Image (cartoon, rainbow, N blue to C red; front, side, top):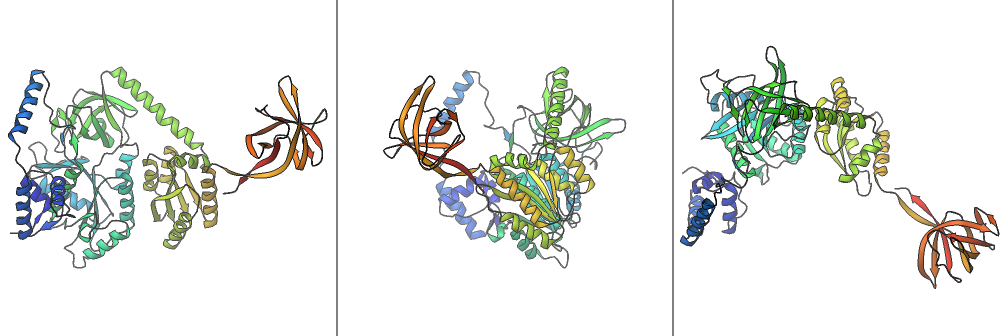
Length: 583
């Protein structure tokens, strides 16, 4: 018998991998993961243990289920498939360095695992398609890379469930690979690493594994959590293993949807087509989109005039996991925009107009924000997020080390991405795609024209410096401005209350200054038998009938304390000022 993976055994038992792993853990076989494989002897042990531990449902339980079902039927209740709908196909993006084989991999999957229908075959222009493996479906988003991937998230949409990172076995991790890793981490979705080009003579899988660990991605085969699959996209080697892993991760993520539920669909590509008008490609994550539905997509709206699937065939509806091209919108929607179905055209127009106003308002307000304002907003999360670019590797490491070493209480500096080279569109997209505010910092580099335009449009603040100390001073100053000020007491003087005079709106304490001086508007602590009675502020200070600013040691004065009239002869007044401490 060949070795079997845990997820394959789970399917034999008719349970999920998570359920089987949990059961094996209880039975004394801990530490197993779904992708682990076992030999024939271990497989037999698992089968025996599982069969002994698995208890067949008792008659009493069966009777109870039947009774509950009958009761529900009598009440006219519909039986629900599941608490949160039925399993749906995972939606997958493929990212990586420009020449590491993303396109070859997608083409190989397209030609080997997509069932071509009679109408049109596979349409290369559609931004998504569905692949099949053993009757299970995977939806692949065919995009240019991490820029489009991040653009989908720039409006708060989570279009992708799983990311496949392609790394060439002969090149290892490159600059664009690091950028893709950071974009995936920021998205907070599971990652599978496809180590491509293993057919090449100079392929070095172990080196790729080692490089992954340097970026916080320890492979499962080395005891970590990152699934890695060695493949050859050109020769079609181990493609089925990769698809199996995608389905496994999807199972672990428990992706579910309700076709009859509210619509959840995301625009993943849009353009203006001659003779067709605005065309949008969308992936449905929940509910069902139908022809003639009136839809709102951000600041535009329309009626679904026609829909085509990834084969070019016209469809009347699209359910969970389905990708379709849509005709009928009034304008081109932004990538990442969610589609909402409404009841009337009037409702759609109002919703689109409202969204247009909301989109414009933040840009205007953020454009006027100072760096301190932006940092102050970030303080709520107690963390400052940065995208850092520098002119060289040495400069980048120095800047990262120095910024990370800025010690400001309560504030954590988090680098979403660091890299060498000019500030790019991808950097700005990454900064704009997260819910919290983030700034882009350049050390010895500037933003290219596209990035600068995008930053202005999206309200992302870019800071550039030539000298590292200017960068550090600016960040430290802004970080300190985020903290609430701290004060220490500075002793000014002391006075003894010798008599109390009642006036129409309160009392005045007749005092003798025994130490230092007393200042008008200073803070005062009222002490009686060395016990604190009140802490407040001196409202007025008099010497005889004259209103004065201060009274020196050895002189008499009249003191009125704000919001406190219970002063008594013999009380001691400790006068102090609050001095802000530099942090």
